Length: 486
Image 1: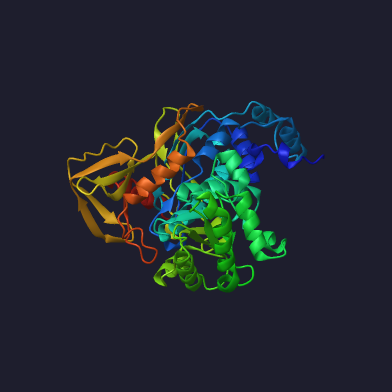
Image 2: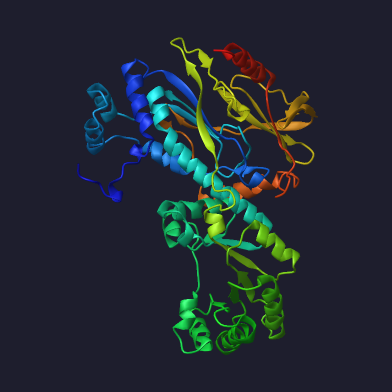
C-alpha cells in the first residue's frame, strides 16, 4: 500500500483502532443509530494544584466540522480485512450529526466536571474520543502550567520559549497557543504567530555575539539594526565584567543619540538572582533606568517564586522546556466515558462505570454544571453538578459537601449561579460564536481572578467544593447498588 505524506493526513483517522472495530460492531449489531451521551472530564489537577484551565475547544470544533472518510481511508480499512462492506459504505457518507456542550476555553475547572458532553449516535460519539482527548488533554495541560508560571511572575511579562524542546511540531505550535491562553504574552514560535496570532518575538542567540570579533561590536551592530527592539544577551563571556558594561556602552553610543530610552538585557545562565541585582544597579547608575532585565534558562513557577524571594530584579521571563512539556506533571489525564443512552421513546437511561478504584467510578446521566458566585465578594465559591432537567433556586440555601471529606459540609446563601457549559453543536451544526484568542486570554485572567487566593496556592491549595445534587447522588448510589455482584 502506498504511504501518504503528513500533508495528506485526514485527522478523522487519528483515532484508536478500537473506535473503528467498535463502530463496525455497532453497525452490524443494529446499534449504529443508538443515541449515546459521553462526558470528557479529568480526575486530578496537574502539580497537585487547586484548579486547571481548560483549552482546545477551537481545535475540537475545526476537527468535527471536517470529519469525513475519503477514498484512501476506505481502501486502507478494506485492506485490513476486518470491516463489512456495508460499514465501509456507511463511512463514505459519514458526518457528525449530534449535539455538543462544552465549558469555554480559559475557564478554571476542577476534577470530574464534564468539560465536554457529546450527544450523538453511537458510532459518531465513539469516533470523537481520541482526538477530543488528545486535544483537550494537551492544551489544558499547557494552559494550566502557563497559568501557574504567569501567576508566579506577579505581573511581569512571561514569554513562551519552548519550541525547540517541545515533543513534536503540533506540541510547539498549539502549545504556544495554549500558553497564551494561560497568560503568556507571546512566544518564540513564528509559526504559532502566523497560524494562531500568538505574538512572536525574539532578539539574539549566543551565536550572534560569537560571529563578531568583539562582544561590543556585536551589541553595537544589533542596536544599529534594531534600535527600537534592542535586547542584548549579556552572558556569552562574563556577565558583569564585560557583558553588562559592553551593553551600556552600545546603548550610550547608538540609542542615546536617538533619544531611545527603552531597551533590555537578557540573562541566560549563572546565579540569575545575584546577577540581576548587580546588573540592575549598573544600569541604573549609568542612567538606563528604563532598561528591562529579562531572564531565561530552565525556569518554572517554583524557580521564579524563589528568584523573587532572593530579591531578583527581573522584568520579563522567557520560559521554555518546563512549560511547553509541563515537565513536573506531563500528563493531564482526561477521560471520555459513556454516561447515558436513549431508548426508542427518547427516554434517557443512565449508565455507570464501576471500578475497585473509587476514582474511576463515573458520574452517570446527562448533566448540567453550575458555578456559584458570592454576591458580596463576587468570588467563585463552589461548583454544582446536577441532572440536566434540574432547576436550581438561588434564592434558597444550598448545601454542598467537601469532595475530599464528605463529612464536611458548607451551606451557601446569597449567591448567583451560572451554567458553565454552552452548547457548541446542534444537530451537527455549529451554533457557537468562537471568541478570538485575545478574548480567551482575557476571559481566563478574569475568571482566575474570581477564585480565592487560597485555591490558587501552589502548595496545599484550599479544596474548592464540587458536589453532586441530591438527585444525582441518589441515582448514582442506586446504580451502584444495582450493579453490586453483577
